[in-house]
Image (tube, rainbow, N blue to C red):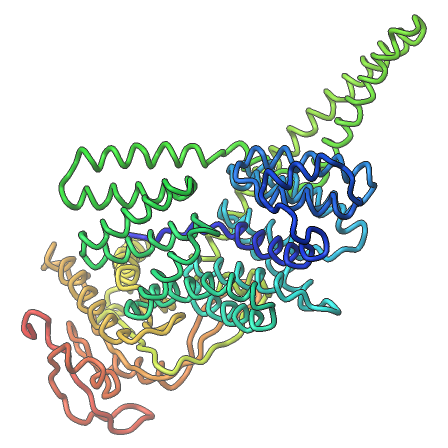
Length: 622
């Protein structure tokens, strides 16, 4: 079961910004006045304050309004006020207030439309657009466009880090969101790096902001520990953070309990899983955190299914689908892609809007004069023809954009088939991959016995099909044990455990995989024992430090180097048919799990005398 990862990043970003501005503005603008929502509305309607004070009132009303549709209405009021005042900064907040509201409603197209409008104004007046880029990255994270999300997170962080005066509350928000993004991608090293940056930057904010942000940071630290398997560290942090953020971010609290629900399910503790799921449901229903109800009902469906309650399970699954369908608007997502990825389409749309407004003006003037009436009619016809042409061009560009997106997805998938996920992401971001040192990695070589002799007499097609059958089965075994296939060299198969993410049990996983590989070879051989081309296989394993990286600039190859690799190859060469031959280093890591037979000191080419062991079959060891 996968962990539920749909945290409302926008919510934290917005809250940090608004609380920061609120703390600065309240003492100067309102004093001891009525700070209730109704009180602020009454104050605004008096219109006996300065423009700055009216603006601060509108900003606070939008922030405090619990109803999303009411937020949109007050954001429209702020926009009208900004137009009258001719203040571009007021317009930016009006656009972003609407964007935040549309984000809560799951209307991604309208969300990005308002965000881009805010960004255009911000860039035109030279404002720092870091918070806007941060929000835009969050939108793309929601719709799983990792490339665009990474691009805008980088832009946001870069703007804040290079500023003459660093806005630490906003920098914390960008660091935190980027960390949260990597956490959901299971890129744990990068997630922890930016989480540390967020914690360090938080120390430079006000005590009020620090106390507000800290539960989120501690909660995600708990999620990091959870994904590392350190449950004793994770559970207290997540439970504490979930309860502390219910008032400010109920969606986040529900998500934290969904994490704990999944953990309990994986551990087989259905009673505890049900307790966590019920707590998530209780918070969601009490605070109207509907964006997380889909995940909560999915968890309850799986729990009831495991308990054998088919009727209850079906009820939860149906509700899950209803919430999921209400949150997912594919047409809006497509509109969002088209708008952001092709500015030409956006420009055409603006021209069409302007033309439609001009047509309305011409129609109004037609009533005053018969001559103007004829001119307006002609203008409308011309405009309709132009709009028709522009619409056809719009459809062509959208079709082209879809084709480009499909090709991009294919190229991304091909790259991830060649390289590990984290390495592929690093290559896309930086255009190159830095070599990494791993202190403990287990390397396996497997080679078919007598392959060269039989390959000389086999048809090329038959030979390729035979080797492909074996290697395809080996690839599936690598996925089962979460190991990394490195490459094939003729009839030799090379793989490794313990990279690109370090783990303690890589040697044991590799030995188990080796037994599965022997079983595949044995099964094929039993199908036709008289066929001389049914090969035996010998396997060798060694453990130690390696260097890993990408070779080449066009045909990328992920490879590993070091004496550990050379010794692993020698272990295979000195192995025997149907046997797993391991070095002393590997033996020390697996001796408590597998029974091994000591072979004594064996003379190894270029290495001298080395201890070797055969790993006994699992059926004999247990």
